[in-house]
Length: 391
Image (cartoon, rainbow, N blue to C red; front, side):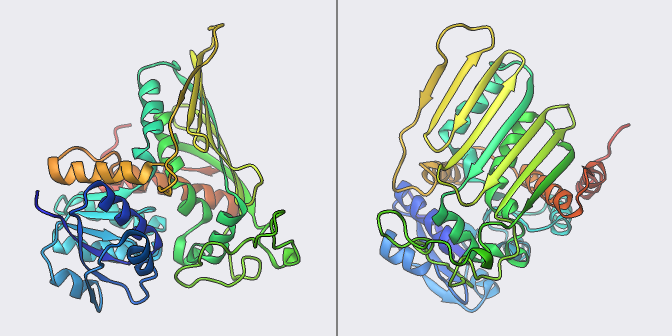
């Protein structure tokens, strides 16, 4: 089997781990070159995965001119994705781009217009949870009618202190680089929750802010009960800040949202970046059954509403070498199956853009203090794709 030649635009921490998973799945994968003025992922490639990064290039144009490649991977900060995508489109090579695919609604509409032309190479977006076996099982049950019609969903994303502190020190702390906290951290969830609901949001409301990683809490204890240092175990990466409580962070560290979908399904979502009990959970209630997906424990529990027996329980083993509990390797297998065999990738660019726009509407509701009507946004989005809606 011929080894895949990969070009990397933006060799950051996250893309280095994706490359590591690709190599684990197919050892012959080779990085031919990269472009990044500050490649913070280099030590991860070398020390953790023993991957040769190939030749360094001055910029993405010089890198792409050194092709051809089998795959271009974009791992730059979110604010650079759109420009890097446009450059990669011109090269004509299949593209893998980390999530979120773009940072704001203007870029979302512009990317939709570009994709609608139909002359771009395949684009795969790293919404890694689409590849999780647990998620696939959840969708299989829901699609099979096990819950009847979906009525309401309650979902959470609660991070332990080290993860929250990393976000408060990493480039994701700044709207200008990463977009919002929800956009960068939970676009996975809103992608799949919209898929479960089976519709796009009609109205959204949200409240959130910063009450955790602020100078007012600078005197908070900096050690765990066992005496080990807290809040700095993970390197800050590109443009990293030294202290989670004294950074120039301008995104939220906790947020709640309400979503009413076009088909009447209702969702409540609660995120917090500093908790003692980590949780990523979806509680899905339908007319015929209920399902709880617990991503931290790797379990799914289901029961029909009129069933008196014990709930059905499913469990998956956790992979300690995978940043997402096995999802990185599952996504690597999906990506390779798409490139090698033409298998469909689990998520489309359209779905990726819709997940991002959903969160952008939620953040707009938080900023304005109003319930946001999403219809104008979807009209602009459909127009960008050239879709004609019949009313």
